[in-house]
Amino acid sequence: MSTLAATGGLIALISSAQAAAISWTLSDITNTTTSTANDTLGTGFLNNSGILIHAENFGGGALTHDGINFSAGDFSFAYSADGVAGTNATVFHNSTLSPLSASGTFGGNSVVTRTLTLGGTTTIRGTGPAGTDVPTLGTGALEIGQMYRIQLIVMDGRNGQSGRSYIVDGIDTDHARGSVGDWGPTLLATGTFVADATTQTFETQLGARTDTQINALTLHQIPEPSVALLGGLGVIGLLRRRRTA
Image 1 (cartoon, rainbow, N blue to C red):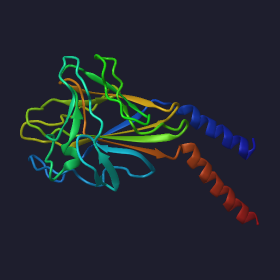
Image 2: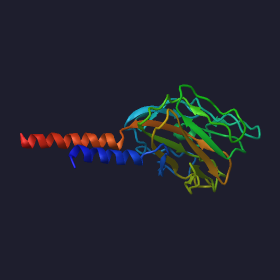
Image 3: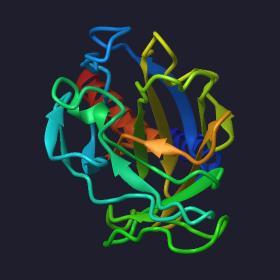
Image 4: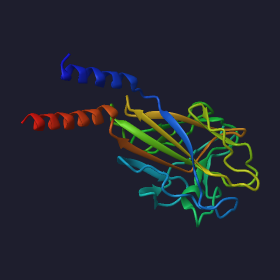
C-alpha cells in the first residue's frame, strides 16, 4: 500500500469516528480561597488555545480571565413553565473578588432540562412552554467539518444548596455546587465536537433541584486531529526528502 493510500485510510478512520455529539470532560476549578463568601475563582484552568468564537460572562460585565476576553452577559433564560421568569443574578460568588463566577443565568423553578443552541448571529431567549424552548446564543454560524471546544463555568456559592449536582447532556457531575459551610470548587465542563451543521445543541440541568444554571461560557475553534495529522505527515515527508537529498 502506498503512503498516500495509507494516509487517506487513516484520515478516513479518524473522520468516521468524529460526530456532532459533544464529548464532555468534567473537572473542578480550585478556588484561591475556600469555605468563605470571599472565595476567588482560580486561574490557569481555562483553555484559551484556538480561535475564540464566543466568550460570555452571563449576568456580568466584560472582563478578561485566563487570557480570554469575556463579553458582558446578554443571554439569559427567559421563562419557566410555572410563570417564574428565568433571570440573571450576581449572588453565586463574591461580585468584587470573583466577578466571572459571581454572576450567572438561571431558570425558574419548574423546568428540569434546558436545551441550548450554539450558532446563529443573534441571541434568542426561550419563549415557549416547558420542553419546547431552544435558546440560541449568538455565537455566529458554526463551520461544518470544523472542531470546536466549549467550556462551561458553573458556580453556586450560596448557602443551602447542598446536594445539587450539575448534569450536562445526561452526564451527572456528582458534585454539590454549594452547601452550608462549604462553598466548594467551581465546576468546569469542557466539551469538544466536530460541527456537522451550522448549529450545535446541548442540554443542561440540575440534580436534586430544578432547572439549570451557567455562570460563563467559552467557544473556540480548534484544529481537527486529521488536520494535525496531515501537518505531522508533511513534516515527516520534508525530513525524508532532506535525508535523501
